[in-house]
Length: 238
Image 1 (tube, one colour):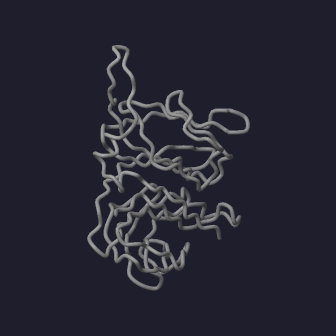
Image 2: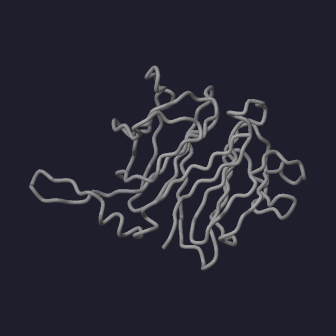
Image 3: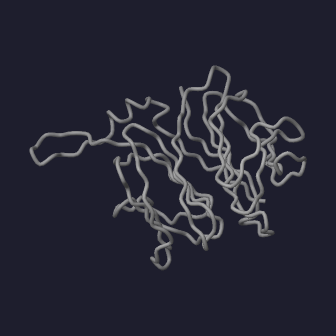
């Protein structure tokens, strides 16, 4: 089983939300005055298991430098606010995979996911309410991004349920868990002891904020797209 542990290391956590927007590059207006246009932070995760390598654009601006494969993510980047057109293209052919719109609000932070299968591509936009975890704690949220899995629970292996009963595109809020500790995680069919995917020995560090996500296809026996648990680092605080 392939487990993705991509890292999205947000600068916002090092210098703070306000500092990031103040230090972001400014644009020169035609009256020779410099200004910083309204902006949000956006990260992107390619969670559609059977898509080919793709390119991602906001309006007419391509975001990625290299092809984006299933399980890849793009770290938080500064995006202008308002209504934005999201466009996804097959990297090899240039054909459009999906075009849709999102709305971004000034100084907010978002996660954008390409989800579902090639036959039914969709986007999912979440607002990331990221706060510094208490001393000795890490922050986690859970998202079920498997289009054919049943509703699931995120749990400690053989132990307590951390997040219950999330169907496809279901997600939790960020919550605190003991930090600087190693966990054996499993995803179970909701309300049962039936284990669908496992992730052993994952370390959750204090002062870090993570997204834990179920990815892949329940019906697949292929190592590249069968069910698995991934961990993304949203932020870390000094």
